[in-house]
Image 1 (cartoon, rainbow, N blue to C red):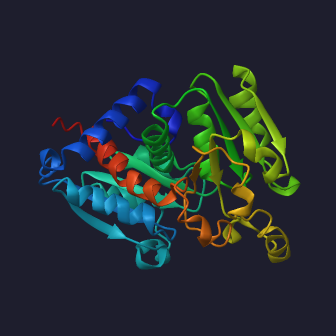
Image 2: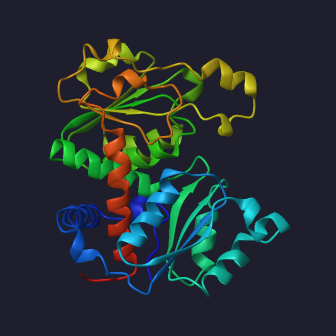
Image 3: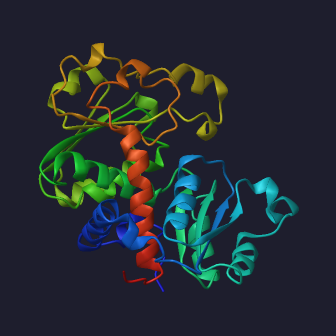
Length: 305
């Protein structure tokens, strides 16, 4: 039985298999319409979510399966003090696979050891968000036709941004990828990402504070929001929240085939005026997330179509 807690649990070959499966789903949706008939997905969301939860649910419905679960901790027995371990052991009696989001790092890993059915990490605190990375990879692949030989700019909250941490880890395995980390000093990428992931592989990266200076050399620009929920101090959040706002003016020096990504939700870090730019791919990214979650569910349930 496989789980997906960290994107690095999937080999490069398995990532490509998921991408290929997603591409086939896009091309032949009717072929997959009953693939998970009689199967149930439990969405256990101890933390609010729109895209991730709904895309998991849409994915399972489009595979012909069913969904049960909850969308906030207050509507579960966690509000009475029930442990994650007990919750998933019970849910494992009712469902075939679990997608779980939790504010505490490591909670989905604990769940995977107790559930008795496959568990997918749908985001754990500031740590990891592997299925968002699957959405990111499919979007880059569809837009660029490759996952190699490109310069990836990561902008905004790189300290608490779990989507950034997962994406850097995943893309560090492809040849010719360089990273430009664009953030204020207080929100720099965690040191362990540099020392454990990038440095051992000799991957090129630079840390800068200016988005405008970095823009001309980027193939991918991955924007993130400054997350209020990760801050202990409201004053720090207010001071940093508008550090980087992408506008049409800032895109003047960008490449014609730049791919602009954002895991969403957006607050104000991308001007709505950018939405009509053909380089804006963040709503495509949300759709691609559904296709990759469909592919992942099939893989973890060992369903062959």
